[in-house]
Amino acid sequence: MLALMQRTRVHTVHMMVDEASGLRAIIAIHAGRALPAIGGCRYLAYPDDDAALNDAIALAETMSYKAALAGLPFNGGKAVILRGPHVQDRGRLFEALGRFIDSLQGRYIAAVDSGTTPMDMDCVAHATCHVTSTTQAGDPSANTALGVFEGIRSTAMARLGSDNLEGLRVAIQGLGQVGYSLGEHLHAAGAELLVSDTDPARVQLAVERLNARPIVSDSLPTTPCDIFAPCAYGGILDPKTVAQLRCAAVAGSANAQLTGLDAADQLESRGILYAPDYVINAGGLIQVALQYQGIGTQGIAEHLGGIGRRLTDIFAHAQATHHSPARIAQAMAERMILA
Ligand code: NAD
Image (cartoon, rainbow, N blue to C red; front, side):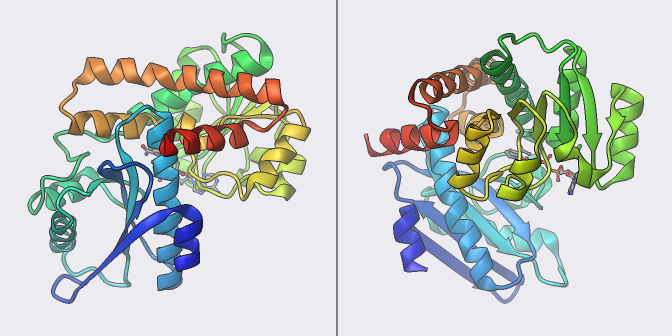
């Protein structure tokens, strides 16, 4: 574990077990910049404790990159709550998490993530003020989707020579909070949607309301389209899938899409432009970080516009140096963190 911490530059990992509530949680904080760390709280079942620890550490590093490239004065952090087979009292569990976060005295600020909701953050807020995305503040998914939409326009401009999305075929994998909302923006902009979700009701909704064409889940990544937008889960861009993609670009919200930088190089050599996930999906983080600083809707909307500009900059550097945008983004983030 210490080797992984050294490699990712995560300098602290805090752990808490609370018998009364059943809480078993980990908070990882990146060494990044001398600033409070911000990042989501995951509430998931893990095969074992090591898997949870690895997830928290890897994600804390990614959050640092995301914050740096989004121009946010925050460091990266991540909380992971290990979901057991039985939850007796969810409210009590998240209040215990709030006490854990409070004991860190503002070094980590919590937000929603996979498996948690704004209602859970309300319970965290009973015990600490170092929390965002409560029901009052609102779910950040809509701004994540808006940022991805703007990022798709920049990607289309860089790869296809125009940011007019009319008639563009976009394949969305996963019609959850972000994917469906992204579909609404794309539909309004005149794009043709190809969609998949393991939940048939989500697909039906997109077919009826967004005039989307349903595609069998496993076939979506290899369906011919202009832009493939992974909005379901990470690890989708492995060497085998990348070899079979039939799109001009990949631009979607899912975290940790690449199984490694070799997959990014493979995309590059196939002429498929890749919008780095932690750049294009920063909209939700921008919302929660700015709300925590007391900045209102107007300021958040202005800051969201930076996602498209940052991507354009990364694509230009990538083109000039013949490197993958993923490598350029990582190098830029590391420079910003060390500056
Ligand atoms: P969500 O859970 O609301 O949606 C995920 C959707 O994907 C669900 O509808 C699910 O049924 C579907 N799905 C699961 N497996 C699938 C498969 N094999 N094929 C097709 N569909 C499948 O999650 P979300 O909040 O919309 O987030 C989507 C992705 O974006 C996640 O990877 C998340 O980590 C990332 N992300 C989300 C935010 C945010 O603000 N919500 C911010 C940054 C990154």
